[in-house]
Length: 259
Image (cartoon, rainbow, N blue to C red; front, side, top):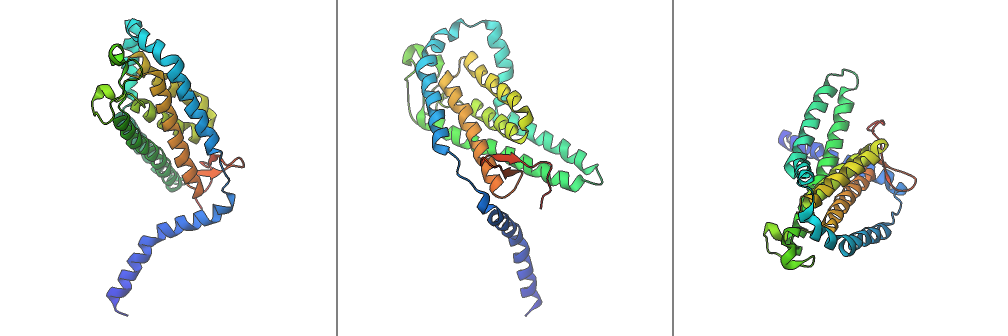
């Protein structure tokens, strides 16, 4: 066998090893995979969005113009935290700082760096997947924003219109926030209530400034949180960042080894 052939085979083997390792990790955990009540969770979420649409959208659409200017100003100052660019910038900064700190540790630097990379990959994948899906939905549904409430009410739709004024449902800011803080709540369950509270308040800021209805925000937060949960379940299937708990929920394995 020629040297070139041997070298080529070695390169192919090295390239396939990560996928082979992932396949082995999945096979090892296959027996631990338990069924999650996805249908029940989905129906509950849909009902919450429908109730928000029926009960809260009209009153908020009518009252949005009468809110305190000071309240609107404060909400406007914090609402852009939900922008995809800001979230990705925050993720990048956390990654860079964490990697720098991890590499300063001679004993656990490599382990911490690898774990940090996987955590950032999980959060980033959750947010990017959410952003892609929510923007497709906004474009396809074409719901009129509260800014056009006097003309269309809460049932104004112009599918595939592509105009900012017809991209209300679901709220992309809320979806990004739901994915980010949903992922953080899963990674750090001790602070789960704090992250959920921050996410709800950031979503509510979209209602206060008058660019979304409550049902838009509820759908956006739910979509982002569900995608973060689904990605966590996927990671847990391979033992990456998460493991599968007795109740089939993904549990963070931040203090465990990477084997």
